[in-house]
Amino acid sequence: MQRYLSFNQAMKEKFGKKVYKLCLDAGMTCPNRDGTLGKRGCIFCDGGSGAFSVQRQESLDKQIALAKQRVKQKLTADTSFIAYFQSYTNTYASIEHLQKIFFPIISRNDICAISIATRPDCLPDEVLSLLSRLNAIKPVFVELGLQTIHDQTAHYIRRAYPLCVFDTAVKQLKDLGISTVVHMILGLPGETRQMICRTAQYIAASGADGIKLQLLHVLRGTDLASDYMAGKFSVLEMEQYIHLLEDCIRILPPHMVIHRLTGDGQKSKLIAPLWSTNKKKVLNQIHLFFEKDNIIQGQWFIL
Image 1 (cartoon, rainbow, N blue to C red):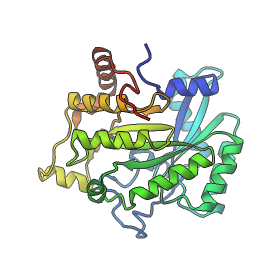
Image 2: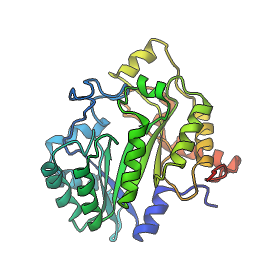
Image 3: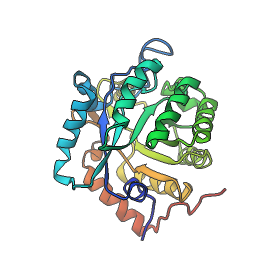
Image 4: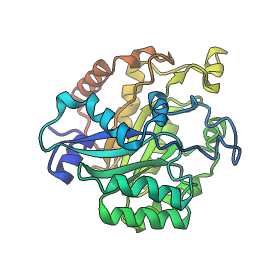
């Protein structure tokens, strides 16, 4: 029985084959780190997207080759790939620079789509026009880091943009026919079950096409780690996380693609929660709970 619309299933239906994401680092920065909005980034930012930040010395073509090598045992003759620009804010550059990055990659025969992680306040008209031109060649997914709809939490994590900016970005991308994926963090300090459910409800009604549900990780060297070590908040236990995840899945519309059910922080930097390091066990437990609790995506969705 299908309990939720997974990324793997949605991509197989869309492209007719198995699709893998290749995580790439295009060497971008972020307005929340370069001094435009701030210099310290979001409170959980570790200075890069985990292990991917070390790839900058390599060309994108070399990064693609290396990423393929890591999954070579799983590949078949007709496997295709999504080029995933993950690190930092991947629309935060001049149009000329973005064109040089995106057009050669989307034109590759082995790439069926590109996915671009960015901030909703980094989508000016000229960038939207560029994304539309790319989307006319192959599908484009734009990932927006919302995390929460609650102003107090957004201020604490130093997100540095208001909710209305997210609303505008989703509408503009939707008007252009560009698939939008929203990042949401479960377990942010001070957030109750009700607050988390309200964020899920907001995303459900936003018009976004997909969602990434992420467990809050505390990574060494971040400002969040300082607060955690000072005892200012606690992290979720596995069953707590799964129950919150179940609430979100029930709230989200049946057609919304669930790109991720959790996440695993870089082991060398992870302080808490340590249970998240065993990703296979966590996913098995999630699916066991979904079966036991009869979770079906959209059970609580209201138009």
